[in-house]
Each structure stands twice: as structure tokens, then as C-alpha cells.
Image 1 (cartoon, one colour):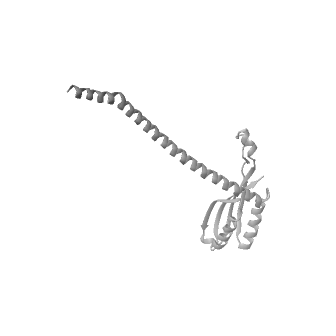
Image 2: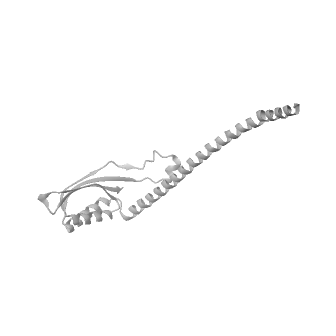
Image 3: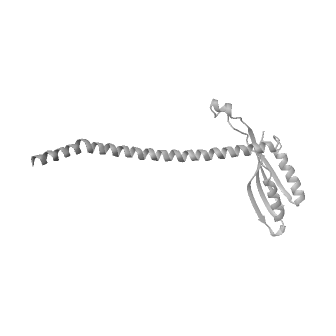
Length: 184
């Protein structure tokens, strides 16, 4: 019986002094591994997001370069007016009003960049001219005109409102809000 008590005390001492502390350390290490796995998954998601953003920035830079190549600097608004004159005459669109308004100059600010970024980033200025137009046009003429606007790389349609009034049939009264981006 004394041998059984000695063996039981040895097992208890092994459990109390060695196995239980090691078990606690193992649990701490497992928690550390779980935390590291979560952090790794977060970083993987962030890196995928960064790759997506970098791809989008690259695409937009290429698109901007294409726009620059297609247009002479400052000729964007003239091209818009020329397009408007040609299409309105050809499609028999009646111009009611045209209100251009230039917004403040935007600058890709060098002052907000670090010195090493200033060397690698070329700055460019662009002006944005918003144009509010009210025209009378038939549906087919309006469709053709809007499709023609899509071909102009520097122009975006911000607002489009179409009204049909019985007095003006078959014409529609169209209110267009356009933005013309001019690189200077």
C-alpha cells in the first residue's frame, strides 16, 4: 500500500509541477497562434485591397494618358462646343439655354507630398467647367446626341432630366448637366 501511495504522490507531483504549467503554456501559445492567424488573414485582405486599388489607379492613369493624347491642352471646351454645334444642327436640336460655369482650379498638390514623392509625381492642373443646357429634341435625336457625347473623353454627364409637355410634342425638353474637364 505504501508503494501505491508513493506512486500516486509521484503522479500527483508530476501533474501539479510539470503537466499543469505546461498545459497552461500550450494554451497560451495556441491563443497566440490564433491571434497571429487572424492578423495574417487581415493583412491578406488588406494586401488584396491594395492590389485592387493599385490596379484601379493604374487603369485610371492609363485612361488619363489616353485623354491627354487625344486632346490638345485647353481644346476640350472648344471640341465640346464644336460637337454641340454640329450635332444640334444635324439632329435639329433647339437650344433653349446654355450656362457654362468654371469651377476653381484643382492641383495635384505637391505640398501634400513627401519630398521623395515630389520627384516621382508630375503635377498637372485641370479646370472643370460645368455646363447647364436646356434643349428641345425628339427622342431619337436625343439618343443620337447622348451617344455622341460618350465619344468625348473629357466630358461627363452629371445630370439628365427629360420632360414631355403637350404644347411641344413631338419634342422633349431636356435639361443636361455636363462637366468638361480641361487639362491646363
